[in-house]
Image 1 (tube, rainbow, N blue to C red):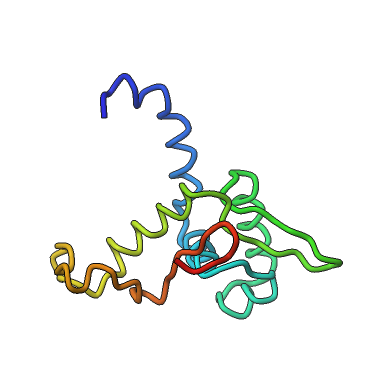
Image 2 (tube, rainbow, N blue to C red):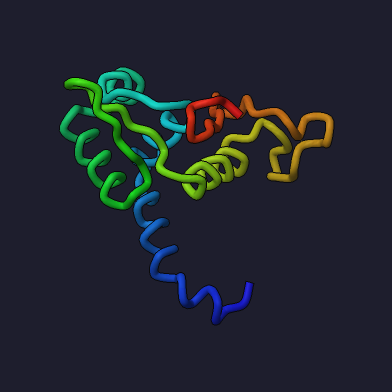
Length: 129
């Protein structure tokens, strides 16, 4: 990557990283990496008061990291795009990997495993990858 090329997108990258820079928002995104969830499902899984969850979801929506889908009165949340999926996968690999304690990649025989931290990536149609 060339510095002048990155400089043109540095503000966008900064905003993306700021949106991720809260442990509660990271946990929400990790849960959504498993697939689409309703607010009630997120409340059961995450140890957050409803008002706090609502504020974090609002921030993630504003920053276009999650999308919503309404069915009657229920609102479903999902990861917004491939950038978010890739970042959660990377964070999972770096911080949740059950591989080498020094952070080295897993041996080729285990490289395809995705059981770290219980996270799985899902495609845009909700299929597990």
